[in-house]
Length: 215
Image 1 (cartoon, rainbow, N blue to C red):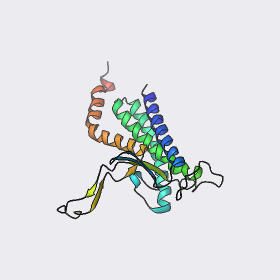
Image 2 (image 1 turned 135 degrees about the vertical axis):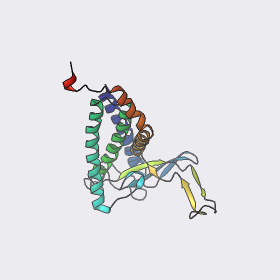
Image 3 (image 1 turned 90 degrees about the horizontal axis):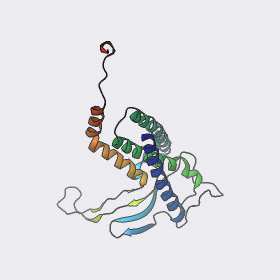
Image 4 (image 1 turned 45 degrees about the horizontal axis):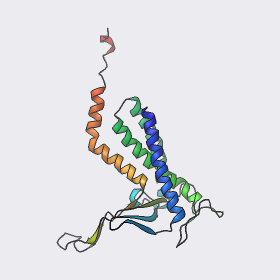
């Protein structure tokens, strides 16, 4: 049954993540945005070639290395979750690991294939799916689509704050996607409840009697 839970969560996150990215790519041009809730939630289309939340890593070679790392991480994630299920870890830990795995797989799909299946979103042009002239990049060189933007607070910092006083400040500045959010929720939840996850597993795992003492 737990295998089904893991598969369901991974597929659900992937479908939501990729459906939203496909819609963004085929309906919006770069830097276009829609205000969903004034002052705190917008759909803002950007792409990044690096890690989650727009972080970058090492140019062209770094892009290949990062995409390869994501692929290895996804494969290792599946193997690790199978181990957790086999050793009867808690459902909560499995859900968290499934979220992380689904998020990594979601961004991996962008990195591996989006350069092949979409052309560039240049100026006010909207990208086309499977364009006749080919995509904007090659295999492993796709850019990750981000769109969720929560500028909850925008304003100038008080002058008394060291180093940053008087600077214009936005919280929360990074633009991210559903895959990033799934990874963040999974990681933070594990950090917050790791002792509970481990203690529950230890409590329900009986100590094995040494073979020479068995009756």
